[in-house]
Amino acid sequence: MKGRSISRGIGSGDLLVSPEPISFLSGVDPETGIVVEHGHPLEGQSIAGRVLAFPHGKGSTVGSYVIYALKQNNLAPAAIINTEAEPIIAVGAIIAGIPMVDRLPPAFSRLAPGTMMTVNGDTGEVSYDETA
Image 1 (cartoon, rainbow, N blue to C red):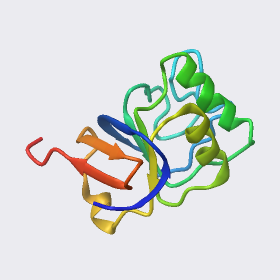
Image 2: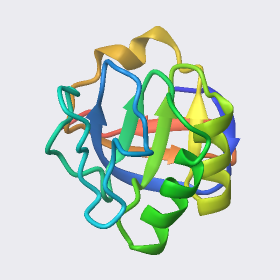
Image 3: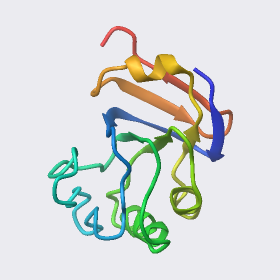
Image 4: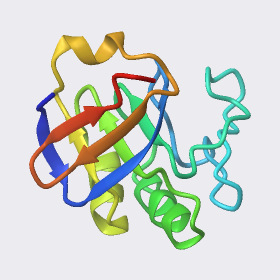
């Protein structure tokens, strides 16, 4: 599948999908990589080393620095996929060196959570293991 490249690099991991936006400031603990936002569909789950797909970010611009802190703590997602990128998440991915793409075709929404994914932020291409 091909989307729009936002942040360069290549990252692989199992797919973690949120139907709701994510706020990294106070929504994700940079010391654990766990989603801590009360009531969020991913509450209690780790984003570390996974391909994190969600519609877009929300909240404060400080969220960009939380993404950077996650990377410094080796707890960042392996890659990020957004429906539509916005500045908070895009800047965080770029400064942290996390591959990121958006605007994937509708077929992406049919992939099951846990599918092994590779995101190529250089080309905007996303591939997945069809045998899983």
